[in-house]
Length: 459
Image (cartoon, rainbow, N blue to C red; front, side, top):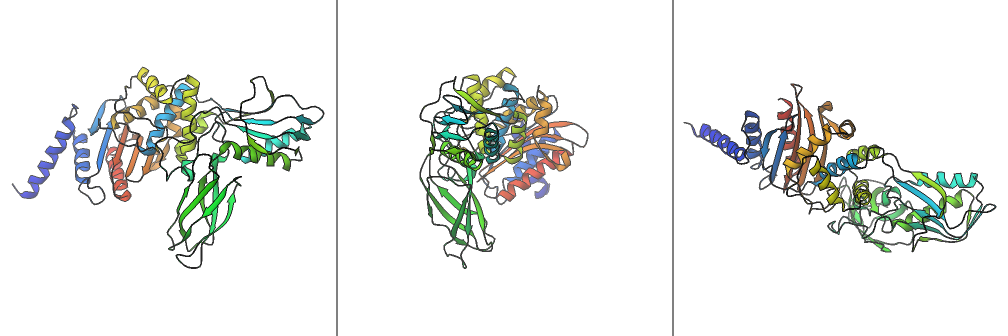
């Protein structure tokens, strides 16, 4: 027997042992993918990586299980746990309500007292919404507000940030705070003009939209051409000082980076007041934060309903937006008067999925303390896609490979993941979860993901 043949047979035997170790019936499909993964961990960029894969058929039977019972950091593929749960628990037509409130109704065009903007957890509220409300109030005859404009985000209690989000996340746009009252995803753009040479200071040109009450400490410098976004923003919950550090590329006349608004309630109240003034409504007081909520019988000047939940879910899967997902995760808990984690576990237990090794520190996957088994994530895809909201769920996933794959991916430093369903050349449907941890090369992890999909699609 040649040395090359011996190595090939040994590799196949090891792959089968990996598969048999979880009690599944071995198959050619399982062996092929097990060998693929076994070889990958010797490749540059994946040396020392942990890789888990589970593939189910259309009936939910396991076809492939490699490290499927080991919990992995999932990154943004965890979002499907939140979205699938919300579709079935809250329903695809669920909407969040935002209200404009006052103690008393306006009389003869004048509102005596404060105008309160009470949030309902809507992550999609925009500046254009505020402008439309102001224009409508002006058409209804409101001319003057003899009081302040206050933001009320008390629907969500506790910190604006998850405890397990890192210091490097919470100042940047992808880690924007989660409040009961949100506007423009609680984000702004910082616009920089690079210096003439690498290493020179970069000028902070503008902040769009305006973030009130902030002292900006700009330490950003000019980086090499084509170096991309190297800026980190450090601040914290309700801080009044934001530090901007890092580099912007030298080959761009201006460069935008996304930052997180530290005080969402004040931010929203500030821009509502500006919209009212722009609509011709005089406001005598300043913008601020509601120290205590108005009574439930307060006068309602305006109600705004968010887009339906089905639209949120499609947006979350397309953009992988952490802020939208976290609003949805918190609303799940509020609507069922339990922790969001408990709502998730109880719902899927009733549907036949008992999570093991699951850790939900957030609902979006930004926390590195999150963990889930490939087996459970694959089974969730099967149950969600074939469940009462299955058509909506499948349509919300991102189409890959000319629509043969519907999936949600995830990526953070050292982590790559993909989960969803694939329709093979034979017309069969398979549900899968691929989780890769500790990769030193994103390109190598991506290559493995594509090879796994190539194999499944040939079945």
